[in-house]
Amino acid sequence: MSLVLHVDGDRWRAHLREVAASRPGLVPVIKGNGYGFGLRRLARRSGWLEVDTVAVGTPTEVDDVASRFDGDILVLTGWRAFETRAIKAKHADRVIHTVGRLEDLEQLLDAPGTPRIVLERMTSMKRHGFTARGLREAAELARSRPGVRVEGASIHLPLGDGGNLAEAERLLTDIVAAGLAGAVWVSHLTAAEVGTLAEQYPEISFRQRIGTELWLGDRGALDVRAHVLDSHPVDRGEPIGYRGRSAPRRGTILVVSGGTAHGIGLEAPTGESSVRARVSTVARGGLDALGLAKSPFTVAGKARYFAEPPHMQASLLFLPSGVAVPGVGETVPVRVRFTATDVDEVVIT
Image (cartoon, rainbow, N blue to C red; front, side, top):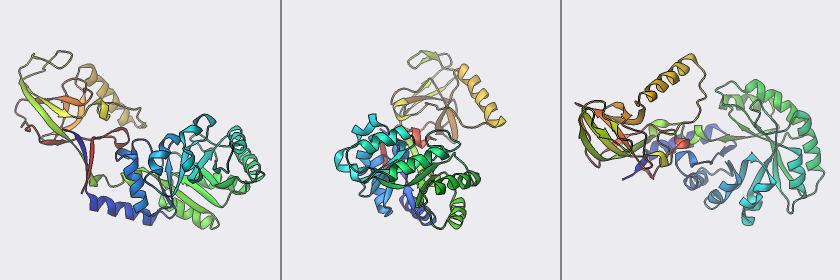
């Protein structure tokens, strides 16, 4: 029994084609767990979209993607000498390195071969990249070395929904001043923002790196489901689970597939900063203290509580008396964070 991602294939493929049509210069992002689909599956799908380049997060992801995609591969993380061994020699000519420090650029230029590079301008994210002055110095250094292929400049903006245009315009001024106005690789700009920039800078080819919007943009096409593995009636006070917790009242312990090995029950810091989000966090903390953590599993139309913390590959849920108990082998919906969930199987119709 498994945790399974079911995909409405026609609807999902239609969405992919729609995004590709609305995003000229599309560069699909394939990183981490492959947005729940797996790296290799998305690499093959990128070939189906007929793009010439994809982006991965780290050098360690290159090999999996290169084995299923014939085009170029941009590595989003800034180049570091200690990670070069992760890229096999047979893929080297297809890999484009992102560089954001002058010392890294110097080491890369001194290394054997003719590296392909993108020079990254620092954004308000403060993650990787050159200052305006550093970008000019890096561009001059790269141009002074025969053989190096500068594939353009990069800006990786914060997450935004139509709020990054002003910053992008400011950073493009620095990129043009550095003589890098051929291709600009961008992340987290809306289609409308890129359209505005393309009108202002017709000489620039904008390469749009898209991940979540492409692969997960139509959530209605995606349905994660867990199998029911077992069920046991319990009385109030009866011990349950690894830790022998007492059942809060009469009901049923439902055992479902999906546990910490899949990412179930694991949390990452939230980016929400609204008052409502903070109140929700406090409320969840209070319930956790009482041993009442709500699970992502839905049974009979409601999200149910964990009977205890999830196990490695299964979870125990508590169903109050009177709730219809699904049978062994039936499935229940699971609300997941796709980028942090490893399903056992992906079924695309």
